[in-house]
Length: 96
Image 1 (cartoon, one colour):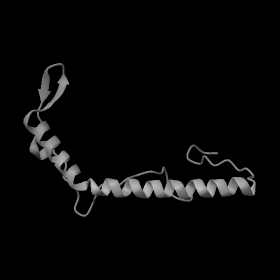
Image 2 (image 1 turned 90 degrees about the horizontal axis):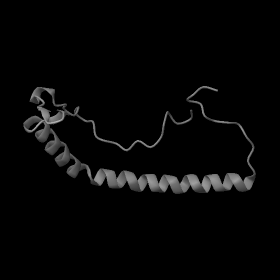
Image 3 (image 1 turned 30 degrees about the vertical axis):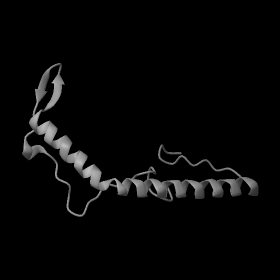
Image 4 (image 1 turned 30 degrees about the horizontal axis):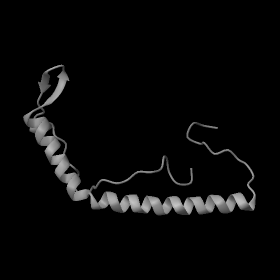
């Protein structure tokens, strides 16, 4: 067994299988709701990013006690075109 393959083969009763299926369906619904809420926050998140970048460029951030370092505008990351934030809820790839 590798570190990434955490599956342990075992037998389940039909009752256990039904419970797992029900639980999985509930988790999928919760995840879909989280995704909707995170996507609804996208405009506000852009404001938060802008405020943060302005703050570290103008005020700086603490590096040691009261010493602050300002970040040059050229060092501020730019979001790639077409890329958006996403909710990540699984480790690895489906089917692993």
